[in-house]
Length: 461
Image 1 (cartoon, helix red, strand yellow):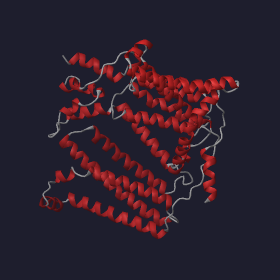
Image 2 (image 1 turned 120 degrees about the horizontal axis):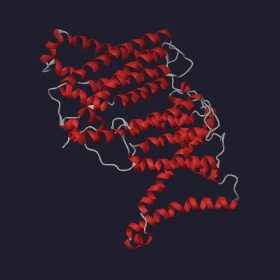
Image 3 (image 1 turned 30 degrees about the horizontal axis):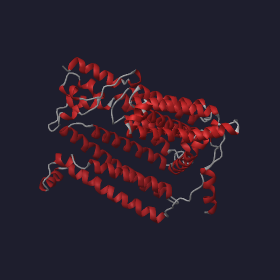
Image 4 (image 1 turned 45 degrees about the horizontal axis):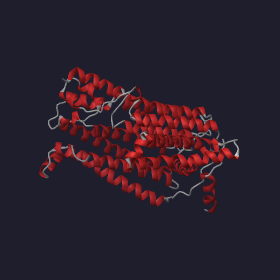
């Protein structure tokens, strides 16, 4: 246990394979400037998309990333960042930003020829802890790069400026807001200047953080003693799981029978009311079951054939829950219409079913020597997100509700969608109800906003 504990300090503070240089600092500063322009122009804009591309280009041009997987992930980040200039949906953009940031981070973390398919959940957690530790060392990393090869006098000047510039900017902003004479005397928009400084600093330090992670010498993740369950323990857990899942499956077949419908009527439910309820609970049950199976597979000792049989039974019965949840949600949409939340729940249900099948393959022992399941799940999520961006889910929701007249659908919902839905709503009153703030300048351009503005000028008088 002491050897495990001793390995963590060396892992968290791994030595640098590449020392900082002025070139690295300049590249980080370029990223900071791009981040400033992107944030001030609006994240959902050409500038926002370019900021992601600039950071990716900076990481690749620094020549610290050697691995094929790492290079591919950094190069893939702009594929998600590009949607910032195309879509406006709040159901897409946050996930695009998270996906781009995650790809950049994984690319930096795997810079020294690491493999994505060797990262399980424990390894991912360890890399995140290492990266958080490196974040505290990033300012010093950039300062050393600035004064690399310089004399003592220049190093002192750089340190003094690093303290003076933020200090002067903050005090000037406070004095300008407190005294009109001082504000007129300096005759600058101090607030804007402070915003520029802060955003450039955040972007520069963020890029420097990624470059520092990419510069670390490869260090193996220290072994962690994982919890284990004996044969009798995991047998009881899996058997209990199978019993409750089997009982639910039987209940679904009973509900479909004439006797089940009569029982529901006696309880005060119509079959439609019964079918349209509970899909969120069913999705939660599927998620919990999947996580339990993953944990049991990681901790079960002497699994063998018994474990596989019980686990396969649990997966098969959970797929019954998946089908039931999908069916119930479909009936609900026929009555109340399709919303973005219901569409995403549909996608989550299908994704959960797919990952359960993949988990069965993993438990069967396919490529058992590598922890590939977490990486595969991440690829599925990224592929789904990219597909959603291409499909334009808000336009899909709008078209569905216009073509399927649901008895209880509220038409005002369509007017609350983003400009992504306007092409599907063209010629309807809802298209004129979609709101968006005006933008000016080439950096603020967004394709969705531009198309919506053109269509509203044509159909909304």
